[in-house]
Amino acid sequence: MGTHGYMAPEMVEMMGQSRSQRKGYTSAVDYWSLGVTVFKLLTGHRPFDNHYTEDSEVSATLDKIEGNGEFRALHKTIDFPPYISENTKLFVKNLLDVSEGSRLGCDGRGIDSLKEHVFFEGLDWIVLQQRHLEAPYIPEYTPPKTKLQYTSYDDMMLQIDKDEKLEVSERSERALLKTSIRATTKLNYTKLN
Image 1 (cartoon, helix red, strand yellow):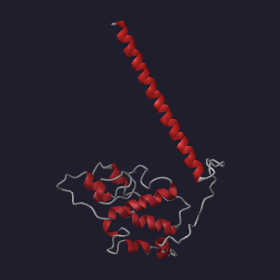
Image 2 (image 1 turned 60 degrees about the vertical axis):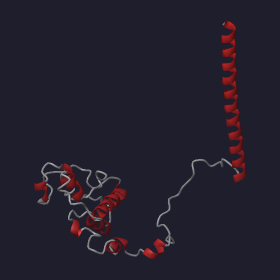
Image 3 (image 1 turned 180 degrees about the vertical axis):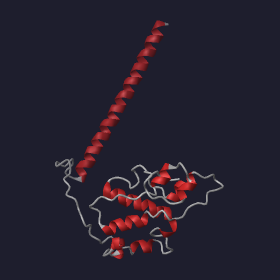
């Protein structure tokens, strides 16, 4: 049904139901999972990894699913680190709305409402789609090996050919050795009888 920690409340609720009680789910579960993923990318952990506490505000739905700790955890307040901007907090909170109907992206306009969120302010979606958008941050990268393994494509292919010939040669030698051992064993057996 989904990966624990990324499942929307409606999916967690379905886990406690028999097949005949399940009503299915909509694309709203994908928006929830996006919210969890964004939060994890920003913080290094999922928003609901902390344990549920009785002091948290929870919806009346919890009474229907008594004892489901995972479902209860999804209703707790999300603790954001101080470095997360207000627009980002709003974006994640809107994606992680426990009410499927009011979750960002579930207003009938789908992805368009998500694209118009203040979190994406200034992003040109057409330029992004055409892959002409420059990355806002490019980390410095130094390859682990500074020495090239091959100086050219031709050198690489020559080495591969040598390696294959050596492998074929080694296999031939092993096959020849096995054959000569069998022949010697058969010859010795024949001499004994």
